[in-house]
Length: 77
Image (spheres, rainbow, N blue to C red):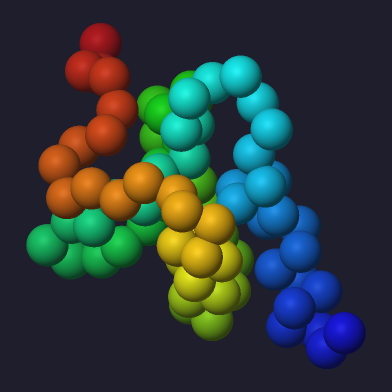
């Protein structure tokens, strides 16, 4: 396995989610960027680097993760 894929492996929980929370991690596309959003923590997930983000998004899409272009979280207090 190459170094790029090894680094992305630490994000495997984003596309191999076995939690009971339905669709905890979603792909959120805004006017400025596409990111991973954690609906349980109600915040974007920090992915280290553009190359890693592209690979994480690819794997999430391949796994059938939901995508949206509207805010996927709860209202902020």
